[in-house]
Image 1 (spheres, rainbow over the protein chains, first blue to last red):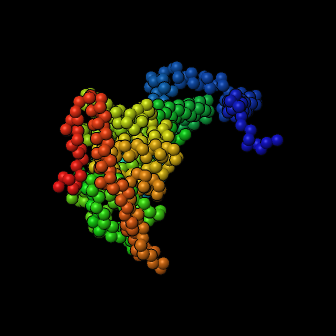
Image 2: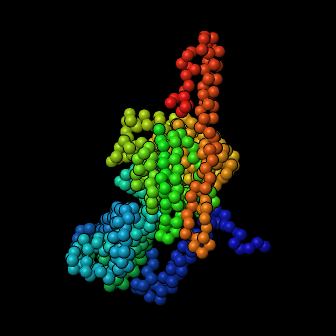
Image 3: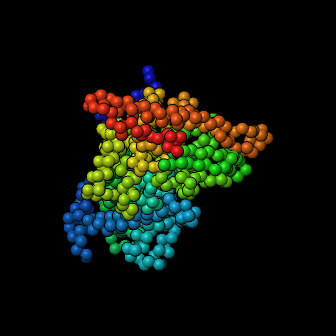
Length: 272
Length: 282
């Protein structure tokens, strides 16, 4: 009898074990739904798959009567647009400002404290201020995401730049590199894989900001729809929307991970 | 011609004296090895030569001019680790310096210039035995190969002085031997000045033409930082006159061999001393 830590699962076992919890959740849900619907066929709290299908068919394939849009796809487009623009601007800021602040000592001395302070301000607490300044349109939502994610990304890049071996920077100088050349050819490429990983980590926070902003005021969007139909206890819409948001987040995470291994093959070597 | 002069250099950190009154004159084409116990200031001395740090007092001159106050392309360096860029291929690492020099904004060459540089880099990689690994990343190389790469990367800039900071410290004995041979050959070929820091005495005397020991001649038990280290011994490991006569003999032997093959009388030009001795030249 070996210790339990010395029993690694085989490949097939691993797959089955991984799927098992998902199946368990599904089973429990179906059983609960069945039990409730048996008592009250009009129950809205735990709808069956037939109601999901009906609701989604309505939102995906039939145009909305007032706006003429296919609501599901329209919501998805609006939310993804906000998310990508917000996250894109944040990543760009993180990359440019992070490298400048991390690499140039005077800029670091000047901006590191203010960044530390800014990153501790709860973004949702300043959302009213953003609404007052930028109005209720798209700008305030994008600014909320940037305000919430960019300081984290900038600080992360600064730390990464600081952790580059001093020897490398000295060597680059003995090869005649200027500050600009070292930033573009030594620092930037080595920071990128890490930045993409940080963007992956901040996907969760970004979705939170998107949905929070949409919940308060918007004309469409996944978060907007969820909070709108909440008034009618429309679980048949909310649950598929949540699953869809999760799937989108997963796909983005997976895409970024693939991008990292494709674009920076050397970064994977380092870990081995 | 590269002559280094260290003129009464002191290095202090606050109250702690690390180096005190270090003076040294190094003529052209020497292989200087700095030895000494750990933590005594060998590497500090090398960092001063590199301008990674600046002396508190005194100055360092190369060819009579004070060295720049920051690391520049006239002094190449190889550290024990982290001397190569992990995100560039072997070829990319070697081509980096010249590309920077010729393309200040993009740092990248195109067309004919790129091809010319690539040929030069590949020739240099062949010379250090990395021709087959040109497309690999440094992480895929062994420790010895990474150090070969670091040397090639520094050499392509044709520095006046090559500084080596315990470059073979992390290598196994066999690899280390091979590296010694390579470094000695490169030193002869490029006729440059090398300054190396090591704590391996055998290595120091195998490689160096001049070996200096750095240590603290005085110690105050109550104030360990009161006195710094200085050059305590200075050995001429390989006499210049012996080296030059060896080279002369080699050239003469080669000339005699060529003569034997052609069967003609010895050409007068071959008998002229290729590296005139100081006394003879004056």
